[in-house]
Length: 77
Image 1 (cartoon, rainbow, N blue to C red):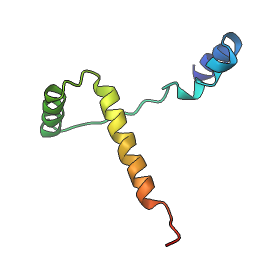
Image 2 (image 1 turned 45 degrees about the vertical axis):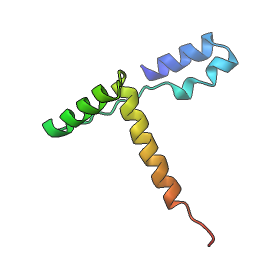
Image 3 (image 1 turned 180 degrees about the vertical axis):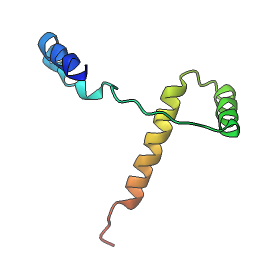
Image 4 (image 1 turned 180 degrees about the horizontal axis):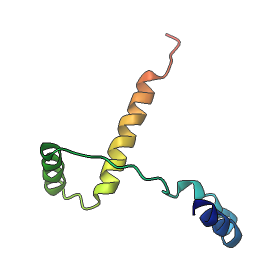
């Protein structure tokens, strides 16, 4: 299905639109939470008025990864 979608995009979109093909979210991952973790997430989202939880979790995960990469980056001194 992914190959068909990419072929369609290449055939029907402009060059600028084709540059965004890599940004399409086509890969799925699932996370399981226990009751306490889910309650904490729900409370946080309610307190800070987070409507889009997928975006919130995606940003939290990527931010954590980028910080770790930044901390692990080799330095000369």
